Length: 143
Image (cartoon, rainbow, N blue to C red; front, side):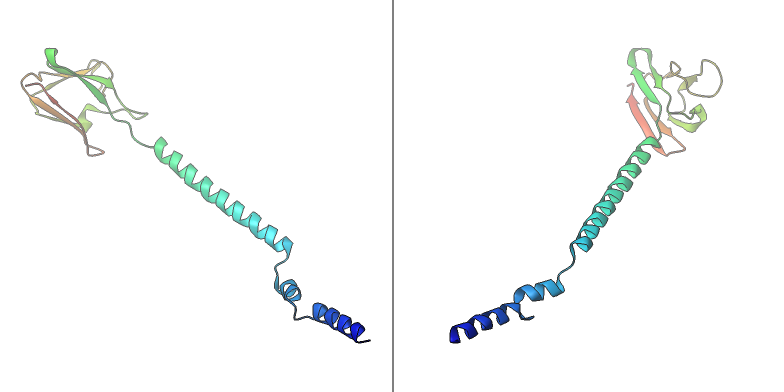
């Protein structure tokens, strides 16, 4: 009979509400809530990555493009190779130093076009700035 009592005592201890497994069962989060939280975290991370990537591409598309010049030392001139992006660049938007150099505007429209040039540069250091963006486009030494 004592054996039977001790066996029932072990069953009572294992089935009592103070055992570790019962404590964990009472305080654990359900599997459904765990899955919902994991999905919410993944969706939040995906949204954050999407926002970062779309904002990076938007800034690179709106960067202004500036005119490009090629120095032709023997002719004493700067040839316009590239005039910029979608917006046309006016000759009046350029600050050209020294002011003793001259501009050849082939079609006299006041806008830079590929193939036009700045001449009479021999013996001078020419600096060109783009006034609207306050950007130095370059310095060319013809001395």
